[in-house]
Length: 292
Ligand code: CAA
View 1: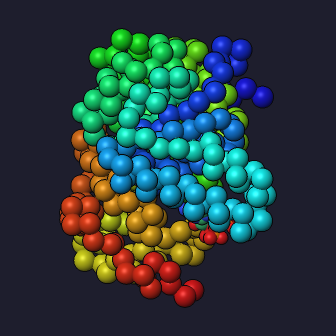
View 2: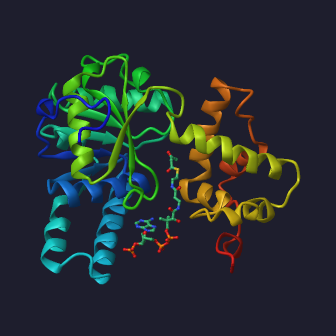
């Protein structure tokens, strides 16, 4: 069954090579998933060789883990290793049909990335952003071909979380959107079409709930106590542990965008800001993994 709002799948373009901009944790997780499910070459890029190498090493380590768990046979693992590569030179994207970015959550940075990539790829290449909260329309605003820009938002951990939010920006064309849905299907994700609104749907709902936990911490409740308050609900993870998994910096950025858009509904948290800026962990290890 076609997901609500998805265009005719016949409009989708073939994807024979994927480019991933950024080689951080989210980007590396995405690279592995694309290679594994689409079975096409995937190239990771980043600002320097060290980051690229780290991203590729992460993918290789995850492949080894899958083999040791018996979830991937040796032959497929060898093939998969051969599909994922890294480069600091973005000209490797010249023959890519789908480029996805997972770089720093700042509009100026994303726009700069797209301006650079647009000069390299073909006009048909779909440009997908994994932004958690930034406007996709604004990212595409100055491009020559804004019709091929689409939001493609994964959740952490990418390999496990079933949902992808697909975002249609003001000028997104049907071919890019159809390609995004077909790619999502091959990745075995549940894809939903959402509007290009601040933090889309999931993070908007999630941050309302997280905001209350942050507010109790800001008001003086010890983090571990606030974090455990909802244990009886049987959540898969405590809220602050989840914030740590996603990254306090990301949580802070998403929170700021929501605060700017809807100040009454999303108060700014002093503690999340402090933690995002200091790079300190939200909770110590035994608080993250309590004996229940
Ligand atoms: N990468 C790859 N696989 C992972 C993983 C990771 N980081 N973390 C866990 N897994 C895998 C495990 O290997 C395991 O796989 P197998 O069945 O093959 O062994 C499976 O997931 C289950 O893991 P565990 O048994 O270790 O632990 P669990 O049952 O507690 O599940 C969890 C872990 C899936 C992370 C679960 O705790 C969970 O669902 N947490 C909530 C995650 C969530 O809400 N994510 C959304 C965050 S918001 C976001 O991402 C939006 C944004 O834009 C910032």
